Structure formats: C-alpha cells, structure tokens
Picture 1 (cartoon, one colour):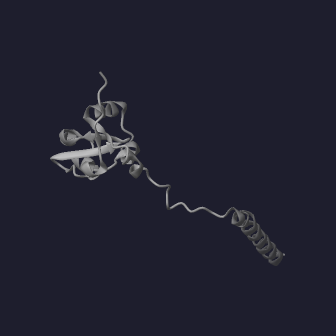
Picture 2 (spheres, helix red, strand yellow; picture 1 turned 120 degrees about the vertical axis):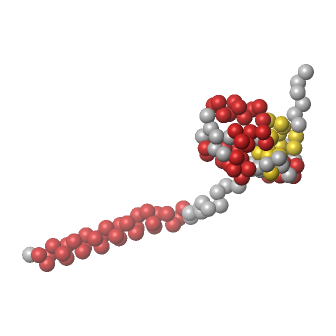
Picture 3 (cartoon, rainbow, N blue to C red; picture 1 turned 90 degrees about the vertical axis):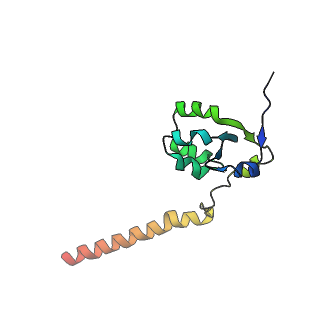
Length: 131
C-alpha cells in the first residue's frame, strides 16, 4: 500500500525554528533535523540559521557528499504544501539589469574606437617630439 505524503504549510514550518524543533526545507521536502543538530559536521549553528525556511540554495552551495544526501533522507517528515510551493520560487536576480540592445553597439565599438584613436594620436605626437 503506497504511503500517503504529509504536507506542511510554510506557516507550520516557520514555527519550527528553535533548538527543540528544527525543521528545514530542501527541494520542497520538509526535514526535521532536531536530532541531528549536534552531529552536523558544519556545526549546529548552520542548521539553526536555516531553521523554519527553505535551505535548498545553501545546501546546494555547500556541495554535500552523496553520503550526506543519503543520510538526509532519514529526516524527511513530509513535503511543502502544493499551495505554498510557488512562494518558495525565487524571483530572477533583481541585481541583474537588462541593457538596452541599441546602446550596446555604442559601448562596445565607438568608445573603444575613439580611445584607440586618441592613444594613437598621443603616441604620434610623442614620437614627433623625439625627432
């Protein structure tokens, strides 16, 4: 008989952000890592900083081993409720600005071209003085 998946809302997950009950989200799965805090190789603080929220990006940035990934499966208690999954999606990087394609030719060709001409003229004037 297939197991039924237990779903948790973000509101429920956020409540578990202390040492007695530490839950994190990784790839839309909910993990209760309370009993793993003292054993975590990176220290308890690392997990506590992520408690009650999505830690997927941090987890992936660290580059955990296959053993660590397999061990993490034993801490899964459910999944993020489907209604809350879109709330976890990160928007595109707001720090990246979109450059107007019409202005790129100016910065890519005209400015360096004018700079090269100025340098060439300065070199020519410098060499003319030495003669």
